[in-house]
Image (cartoon, rainbow, N blue to C red; front, side, top):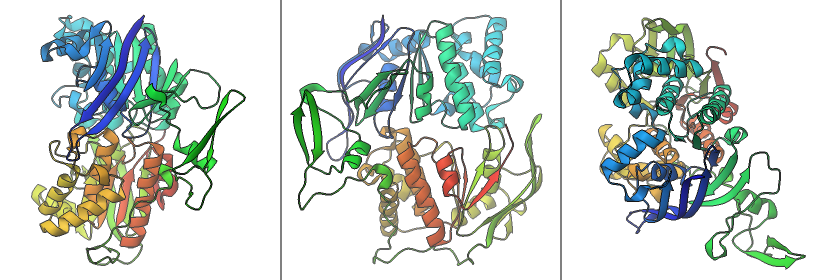
Length: 527
């Protein structure tokens, strides 16, 4: 039986240029009991697909049916009832599902409570799921006491608690290290199959395919490749209406095909080749496209606007820092120095204290013991307002929750942050455009942030930090929601800007691409 069926679906978001198509004639079906993984780069339409399936958005054209229900025709109340009964939705913005005043056990049990289950029954189900994801000992912890990866696992448990017929999971492992991500992908598949449910999971992590019954590739809002688990074959390319083909850029590059190709039929096969001529050139892959350098209005290369620092000089330091949350002590006596002009990554498994350390370094939290020193100033000597002022003038923070203004465009978000830092409107506009171009968002500068994909929002938040050209940039999992090509581009940008501007970049990450680009690595915890 078909549980999910989309036919010729379009989703177009309004824009200053007339509209941006997130989905362009998407057709896909998911069978009952199937674990279907949808892969694709940032902006390919993965999250839009899930929002349509969960009744959180409506198609511009085409049909969306889930468990026999015409989802697009539901009223707001009907869509809410549909989700509570049929769908378990694990949003990529997992923190939205985690009320700060509730414990992990209570958060997982919320849906069961709304459905009228008894206290003992819902508590037992919550504890069962928390133990399955390795958080049985954290059942009484509040979200603020948990790492991003731990919060993400709790949100997934909450989506599964009522045993939905369809689990919809959007980047469910974005904040997890590779080992924990594999464990969670396996658990999603296991739980879905145990209760006879169906799972539709989107990710940019190709390792998710190992736990799928079927893998679908999206590019430009269309299905470009589809295969069953374990199927070994040449790259499969889906033929769309009107003979449309989407050939992966990697294949075009390998074949030397630029903006013109030749095609001929030989022995029942269609052969594509590069058109040879004086204007032919190789199409670069997305990873090979280098970010645009920051430029001042007069065309000169930009250097840091902060007071000069000797290359390699210590600009941020943790001295014997200890921080506890209840019975957990993620940091106990940590000391580290971060230097100008260098990219330092902090690594470690989920729950090892990476996010906690970054919050302390940025003055968003204070240690129980020890001291944080930024540009020679001990943060412990400042009150909350003083620490905020120090961030405004010397440090930019990119968190796991990007905190952009959803109804403003990407450029407007960057300009707003710059105006709060005291930059005039003209300079702010120039810097915003430079930063957005550097992270590959120039063509999306006018789009409201609410209409951007998770990866695009992450890049907009990074652009907002880079545009300020601070002394220190502190970023928490900056590539977690990016595909490999964009992650490599952002990591390369960080490394290059560190060396060219003297800015110190401090990033918590699980991403091996970012680790490979780092000048320094600070490991925390162990599995």
